[in-house]
Length: 176
Image 1: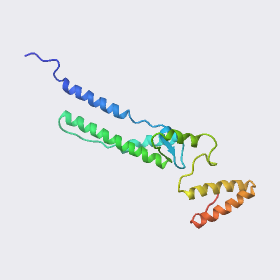
Image 2: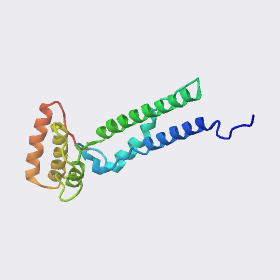
Image 3: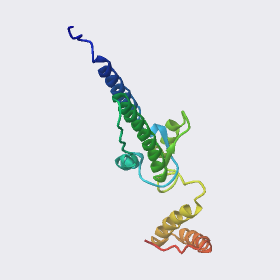
Image 4: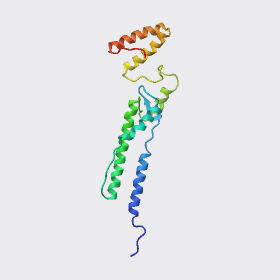
């Protein structure tokens, strides 16, 4: 009996389908500043994203699979999907620690320009983190201290008031 040229193609087709699915899944992860809004102090979005991107591979898990080619391919695809989910969660948490979070659908594009463009809302050009009155008071104290040293008497009063509030909270502000 003569060999059939189409025999053996079934496994090759499955391998190509698996590779195509992995390529499609890996290509889905895109992030840009329009998807995020600044929620606190930290680096610019580009810097924060690059730092998180460099380390996201550290959450990947390896795998060992022994069995039929289909089982090994399935285990590889399952591992790749699990790694993608872990990397996505890592990026989310890392960007939050850097002062950025995913904006509600459709609101990121309007949130980013308010922070980055126009007149800055604070002397530092970023929004104050909600609930972080200590961080805000420390930054305001530092700004008032610099102005006081330059001779602004009103800033000296602000510095004294903020210093009293911070000391009452157990923090002793000092110029850096």
